[in-house]
Image (cartoon, rainbow, N blue to C red; front, top):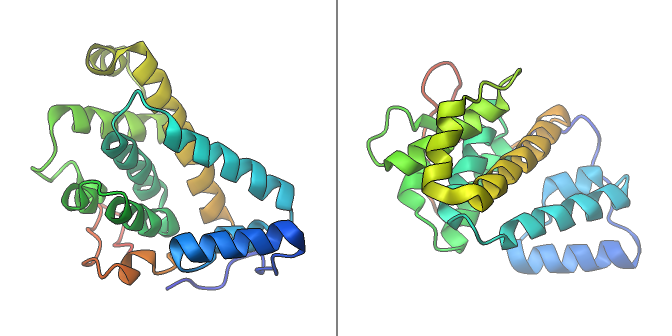
Length: 197
């Protein structure tokens, strides 16, 4: 479970705060810790949440691919909250849970298709500093997803970087969403990053 974030959580106040509490508890069973920490500036929370909801509505890329891309970013950056919520989201949205569990160790797993591997490689390449995206990787994705799909995927990965890096910087960790669905422990990332379970 989560440790203490670097900025203390605050009460969600006002009409908007009450609505957010009601909505998130109804949808998720709890108020997400990033919301409680970031509510010190409700405008930022509202704007980032609106952007996040919009990314979920884009339709050029399969939802599983977008989920794998976001979780790849979270795994690389070390955002345990994003991984925890990613598994919960996969479960609730009927996405491929078995594959979602393998995202942190996708390079060693044999469950992914070539397209899924390209998507996760792209997510990692975009998330490096500096980015390590190659012309060949983008060309392969263009061939498989088309230009609208690559633009969408790129934007999903950019949003995942923004939210994952923000959570890590603020000290926000896993909240137990995956455990609430009785999902088995999370896979470990290959290499030097420990389990986020």
